[in-house]
View 1 (cartoon, helix red, strand yellow):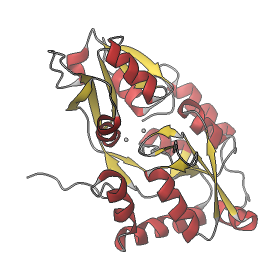
View 2 (cartoon, rainbow, N blue to C red; view 1 turned 180 degrees about the vertical axis):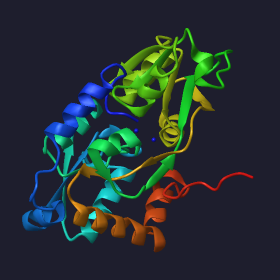
View 3 (cartoon, helix red, strand yellow; view 1 turned 60 degrees about the vertical axis):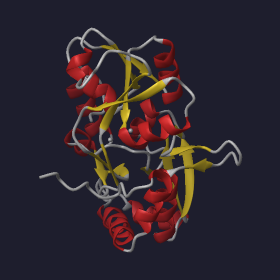
View 4 (spheres, rainbow, N blue to C red; view 1 turned 180 degrees about the horizontal axis):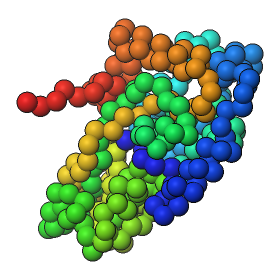
Length: 270
């Protein structure tokens, strides 16, 4: 979801403001101690991003890859998971404001975000991928091929940042994927840009006349995201994820949702 916080033109100002406003206070308790005292971990996610995190229609409960990872992390830390859903465009600001402890919702790890937040080791590896209409005769093999075209992206997502970095693309942002794909299907946009893992799921479960397009970017890493100033919490979460990677727990969750192990970096082709 696989990256800066804000839109071009406002990056430096907003980033500096966030760093100043939400810098960890000297002597503040480590998040691990705070969560242990409370007995729970407040976990934010979008809740509308299948197969990563979404509301199951039958149970009404949150389900998905991120949800299972979040439950594993909380359980191994001896904490009860408390889920909070919020729109993607506001999720990082909510973390900075202290509305929840962590985000486990496909937040990509990149240098700009690392200036403001801390991340665990990566638990997902994926890449950006285009989605196009079935029967579209145009062949887009890169974002540059979409100059002069309309591209649908998630509001505030890394995919929006990547598309906006290419001059000449007409960007249309959406709060969630369903609206984006519906507009693609009826021709309001020429292509959509999203996570390759989500694309496979969407195409398997959608009845819309859409199909997978080209992969158009480098491998992205996502991790558990939290405010700076909690080295004990970071060490504990990293340990949980490393052990879950070693004992096969993460692989099992990954195979459940994707049919493949996406918790490890793919091997480089010779």
